[in-house]
Image 1 (tube, rainbow, N blue to C red):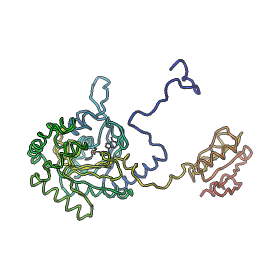
Image 2 (cartoon, rainbow, N blue to C red):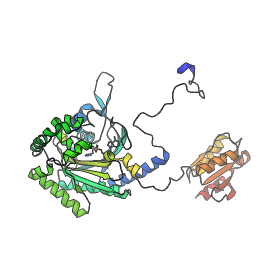
Image 3 (cartoon, helix red, strand yellow):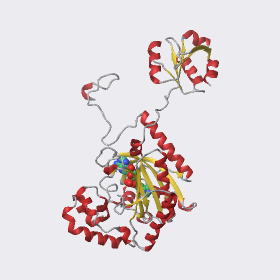
Image 4 (cartoon, helix red, strand yellow):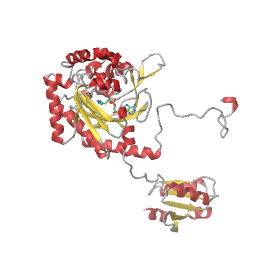
Length: 430
Ligand code: HAM
């Protein structure tokens, strides 16, 4: 404790003001109320599509993320939060940067693979990526994550895309776009990557430093680099959609047919490749025009039939998406203000026992959201504070009233006031 100050209640803190860590943010009550609406819509959507909720830990073994998301990817590599190990096990742990690898682990570890297939699973929770913070990009952020495990049907991809689209639309977001691509599988992708490398090699000097590095170990990512110098080159690159094997061709054709039949608008985007290593075949992203360039993706996903094997589990097909809640809440049209949290405030006058005020509040709480103002202020000051709180009612009580079981109940909007017994107050409140 600096210079002996700041260790007693009420003393002046001697150190600089403590602030939230860089790249994370508080969600304060008025905003949290909007989050609650978005989350409720997510639960409701999931229920209607027959999904069950699960929760996986925020902490996962490093190996799960490195093998699943890919050490070479940003989220599974340089942006990974690593925990300093403690204790004897020396386990290497990380904060999860995304949920899919953890859901795949939980599916096998929890024997969901023995249940009816496919399993439709969803979760809401925090993810962590140590990226450079900016508007719409945080180091702790939240996702609505949706996965279908145990089916390789293209129809599942279409169902998921429709589900995400319906949710975003239902939230009232305008200017939505959906981009779709196929990035092939282990049969057709290797030959395409050879083509892609030979296209880019002569252009290497014109690419950004990151892409020069990616050229050999992750050339697909060159296609979606947002830097102008790289975008200039990606236009002429061979398109993977033109180099798919026939099962992959059939799969994307089926997804497109189903989306068209469902009336979901989409744009085939040959440079869409996604940033995580586990995808095969279908990939998609939801974009919002009004969001800034690199942060314009509200969500995205795709099929990941190779993930289970990469993690050492029995072969399991999977497909899913995740939505970024920060970006969605930021983009919502203005809505109604939240209702005040306290509907009735009990205002005990000086001399009223705290226990009596608590009893009166407890009674009020059987009908409305109620709290008591226990501060040692004058009744006038308490009334001013009650008006600011937006409470619909106040219940004033002095010591004589408290012992007689009486109360003055006032409607704050009309100023109408009546003197009642406590039981009568409960009746009036409804
Ligand atoms: P992702 O594209 O990495 O996919 O993330 C999904 C969404 O999370 C993004 O579109 C964005 O809205 C939000 N997001 C990502 N990083 C940040 C950040 N630093 N700050 C704020 N929002 C962010 C996945 O995570 C995959 N696991 C999705 C998936 C599920 N694929 C199959 N199943």
